[in-house]
Image (cartoon, rainbow, N blue to C red; front, side):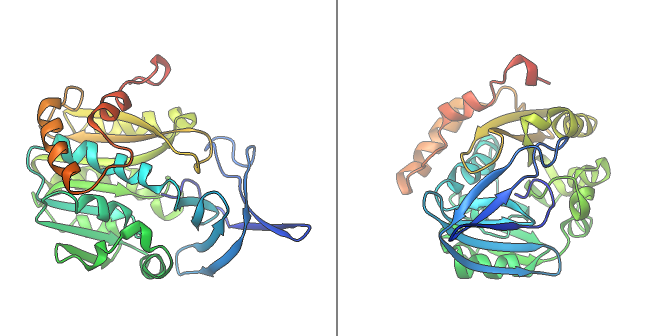
Length: 299
């Protein structure tokens, strides 16, 4: 979920320690700052790929930070993960084989496994994120890593997907912004590999940042996907722990019209899932609303 690569910054103010995020918006790094007081420092290290920070906050609970950017918090991660997963899985008529690229915290895996899927492959480049998430952020995965339907692999997602053709119903890309190692995951070449790896009714969904980065990331990503997929749809969500307000997911489909999903079917399937476990944020009504964008952000 990281949105721009910088080092984690911890400063002291009197007896308090504060984490400070200052990397957004994309075009104006350092002009806006979000600060959270650290109640307890749980873990900090630099892995082979990124700076990893975990701490407790009085309001947000446990917080995961990668390269200076808040990835998830205990208080509101459900918003992100429910909106990343369910609009796409419920729009697909029969999602069976799912690939998640990134999301080593396990939150997306948890939500996918609420559906009657056959197998979920989770591919993350950083083993330490997976290990530390299971040790310190168990609320995110809620045991999903132990599921028999889950295959967890430590690999480069860009390289992994090149080995498959017509293999997956849905590919979920939960990566950092197009900076450094994540840059290839925003290229048309990568999207072409995803297209090839999807089945005939296959779908892709990815997080593409804040709407304040509309021109830099969202519009350019939409254009790249529209050159490959017949249907491309952006939808929005708001999450308190993310800097700069409204954020955007973008979905693309080989066959399904994402601008006009079959909401009667979605509502029936949602009702079955909701009987097993309560949804905290997503609903078909929220799904409809998320696809309604202000004129300035329409594509």
